[in-house]
Length: 188
Length: 194
Ligand SMILES: [Zn+2]
Image (cartoon, rainbow over all chains, first blue to last red; front, side, top):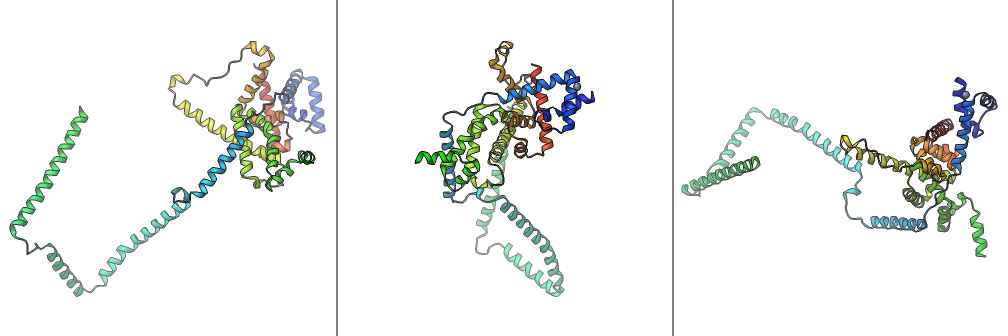
């Protein structure tokens, strides 16, 4: 049984004459004494012969012409590609995209880290008296900004305020109704 | 005079031809194509089991040769180089085919999965008339695992040397020898069961 296994593993080496003297001696003696191995060898050997004599597949008559067409088509597409030098995202290699997004990330991270630190530093560095002045200035500026323009009459202002409120409210109602209609429609 | 020149060119080795083609001689390219078109189509047909696709793939092999003629360096045998290009294209095609097949089966319902892909029926009557003998062998080859199939085709159908096969497959001699032996045993078993 062990010999049969060894015999099997040596069949091709024996057929192809790629076998050492010792292995060849073993192979031939086992072939003579084991009938099943002998028939296996005969079968494999004739199959190998048969494979070598299979009918050759011939290429068609259009082979050369199709090949020429392929070559021409390929050449034309290359010429087109080299002429078409307009901007295209495809021309930017992937690593360029990677590098630019990495740069954006680094810059964003740098700004994020720097910003709050600077702000607190500045506030800490400003003396209390100066800070009060700044705060005062801020309030006056804010007051000026919020103050109603003096040159418009009271009535016009009131009307404008009411109108703007109405239109906003009206829009909200309309949107809400639209949404409800949609929901109803979907339910149906 | 012209005939004499042509006669001389015909006797050129593959390596001399590719060198001429690299220098711009298109006649040399055509000569290479004519030398290899049938050999390669035969190899690819046995490997992918479709003659039309095989011819198309061999054209693509020559297109690659045309585009990358300078990629060939004299350190390798030209035949090994061109076989390797064809083999790689064929492997890619088989991979694509496998994905397509997987997608096809994943789209089927569970009750459809018993249906196999349509196969050519070989009747016992046809088996008796030796003309279908080749068809049976081809079907049996197609059933072999890919790495066994390519090894046995290159060795027994194309009759290449072990060294050439090693270079084309990119595996050491021990692996190639064992694959060829196992492929032969499997194929023998497959044909004996018919
Ligand atoms: Zn035995």
